[in-house]
Image (spheres, helix red, strand yellow):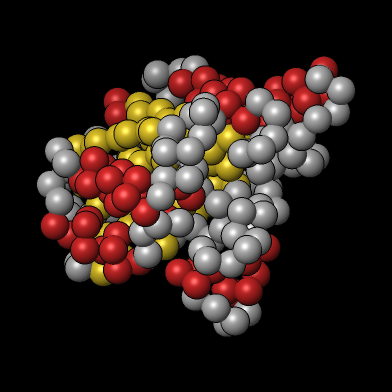
Length: 237
């Protein structure tokens, strides 16, 4: 497998009492996951934990194609389990945004639902590979505002897809080729609320893998840290 170095951190932030985010790193399988339990809803931490537990249980010896399908299926089984728990609690809303990245054989594939994000820093430029499933994302797609402006919108937290909500999780997929020197960033919205594209680009450009997640975390905390913050950065060697 292509050499990967990574660093990961999750933090409750400055305001919340509970960290409803969950993160997972399975470097031997080339899989990394950030799940963001829906704030203000019952058992968001249960939802995010259910996702990472299902992914962590994947068999070790799968081919890349089977691993990709199993990753998607694991998120689907988590969706079903969260729905069951919500019904058991009397029909409350429980859910989580998720972004999951798999890297194998010079390629990557990512699945996501909600507003957790995947960025790619390559050749000095940063690109948002995912597109938020949110009310304000529709404004961005219509050309009415930029992603950075959308963070400031009063409805920036209103997501339209989540694992555990609705009949299907509404997963989207993106795939592409990796190159040596690529740097991927997975994060919950607790980071990108406080770090716009240029701040992310400068930090991903300057910070070594050993300190990059701590640098990004500090930016979010200095900005207010009103939400849980989860960050995974990985370098393709």
